[in-house]
Image (cartoon, rainbow, N blue to C red):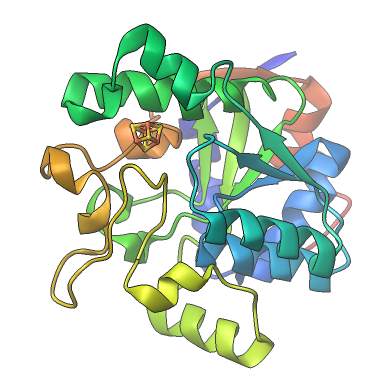
Length: 263
Ligand code: SF4
């Protein structure tokens, strides 16, 4: 095994800046092989990633954290993505149903501390069920999301999951995403057409006004200090000092020490 630090990825990240999402996707497949998956919350950017994988004939598994309190539109989108794009969607579920959790701990999402606990129990912990299965996770975060994502690295160490997050859409601008969706008739969560710029659990997501920030509809009842759930490590901390252990052969391939491919 070899230690991989975020700093080790600096040169590679710089070289990725000019690559298209599809090129980065192909690179990720060639490096991570069958230890690569997509992570999607079934929002439009996740659908774009799934469409790109499907059209490239990359039948990657799609991890979906099913908190048990998603909108029906989100679940319908999940089922359509699986069926129409031919991708296996793996739903990861919390230990307790929301009813069981509420009976045991009360309505957590009504205050900031409770929200952090609820998101940990219903999002972060279910995702951790897949820890150790994948060395690379393709996400759909974008710098255009703004706020803490404005400086998102394309490749980011995820210490909790012990893997590399591959943010293939990091550089994808809003107009590029709209064009991609329109030109390819991408399946999108219909709530995006009903004023929801981002979509999470039905308890904590509302539509946004045209002049509001994109994430204003997330945890609106808690105020602007609760904008992220913590499932994406780059939303809550910068991984500069973090390191993970990966097989030496993989680290060599990742860093181009053993190159037998070109992108
Ligand atoms: S978004 Fe709300 S309901 Fe969903 S896990 Fe977080 S606090 Fe709980």
